[in-house]
Length: 106
Image (cartoon, rainbow, N blue to C red):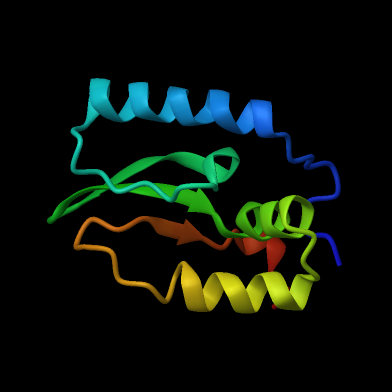
């Protein structure tokens, strides 16, 4: 199952996105924004809460990255992501993963 049929993972594009994110965070926020390493192509931007700025990623794109880069099935990618990424506490300013309403069947 593919969520984003037109998404294509590319190591070179991911590395460029990593540098762009670092520049963006340092120029507009601060170094305390925690990013999700390996999911740079899913980065949407940053948002604010009372506690500060948080990096925001597209949940579906993160699963696509695992499926394409690591050759996981959809179920394996979702299980891995929920346990190892969203289920891992990495600090008060940890990233937020947006599940787009358009990607969910209501």
